[in-house]
Length: 203
Image (tube, rainbow, N blue to C red):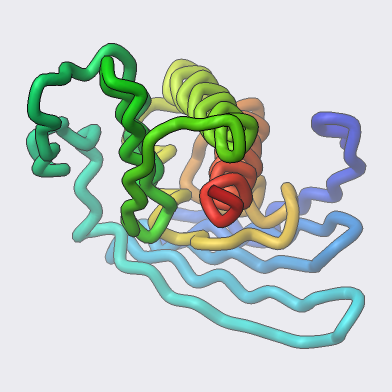
């Protein structure tokens, strides 16, 4: 099947009361995703088609907090004599920004590492690039939630920290019984997250 302009091969190898095993292949990798329905965990086995490297990860879904992240989680610092006039906060990653009325920015990458800078002519392009990437990430998150629900999106993000391609995301979504269309929006989330990290490094 073609998803988001990319050819993805999806094959459900096993689907019974105990487990669902899904094989996916895209231009980057071959993935076998096993969802244990009884114990609620996922095993993802991936083979990189270019390097031949193989990896295996096991994720326990019983400990996933599917609640959206809360503003209070971040312990937002305040600027004296300034107020926040714009912000963007990811619900699934630690990427976020706060923009104060005195042109001060607080920006965070996906590791939660913070940079605080005043906007000027030498950094404004990268700051706006960072903001635009976060805003696109937030749009993709809303679309993913609408397509598959908070729990499904949370499960994929918990299982895959850095997917090599759309096929890996499709594999997890199908294995947990989600809607394939949701996978496209989740893949876009990863792309925008990585783009924001790129701009964060340049500021």
